[in-house]
Length: 190
Image (cartoon, rainbow, N blue to C red; front, side, top):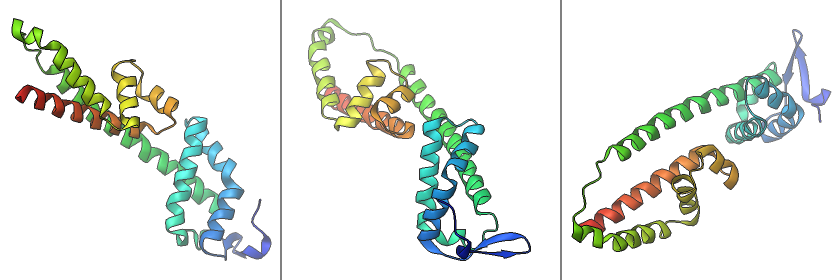
């Protein structure tokens, strides 16, 4: 679909869009959808990531469709906004990776206490307590935790397999680890 001539007016050679609101956004995204995705893919975004970014762009602009008013080159504006969203995602993912890497390092740095004979005999109860902690997690959170910690899947593989975003995988892992640590601290405090 393309924008109709009666939707636009020309001012010094530039096309200005006269209609406003959500209707303009809907038509603009529909008209330039492939152009936006192709621009993202030329800048390194994968096919599914480009689609997701265009969707996020639409959601953001639908909250403030007036941002499209008076834009001289609507296609260029949408492409630039989508590219900026991708840059923001890359920065956020890098930050979250650093954050979770630090948490993983801290978890792996905790020394394993030596177990006395009495503690070794208590190991089946500890395993049962950990299992109960894992199975008390919400389903999606539990699936992510098991896939990451037991099946040794990467976070990206988990996101793709479950059809969720990578940052949701990170959030589920953080929630599961904190939950299990709390439950095991409670068990040790008994």
